[in-house]
Image (tube, rainbow, N blue to C red):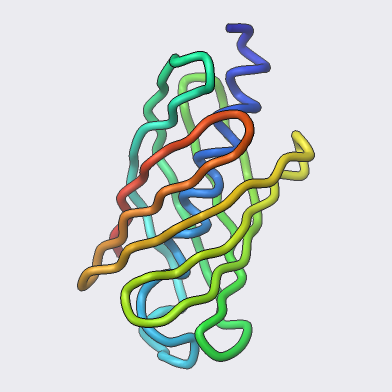
Amino acid sequence: MQKSARGMFLSLGLGALCLAAVAAPGRADSPGLAGSWKGGGTWTYTSGATERARCRATFSPSGKAAYDVSATCATQSGTVSQTGFVRGSGGTFRGTFYNPEFDTSGKIVISVSGGSQVVRLSSSKGSGVIRLSR
């Protein structure tokens, strides 16, 4: 796969994961949620190829149980940034992400347990799983 195409696919999925993971824990009005999260995971392209990624994400409350998210992920193909929005309750949050560099969007599902999150994302370019913590 060409390096630019791999970077685009990766950015779409990994960015979403980071975005989602940041917003997952607790209620939007909880002061402990705002801030930075980091971690890593794997992105799988529709071709079957995979890449490991390291991500940092920051989220801000944007309403009751809703969060705006920004994230940056790095892989061997490059570094990408994305934005997103998630909403949920309990330990599950769902939302969408957007990568302006590649004009691509996708879906995010986050499962939160204590101080860690498992972020699953999908787009037409592939899917991924990233684990984040404070």
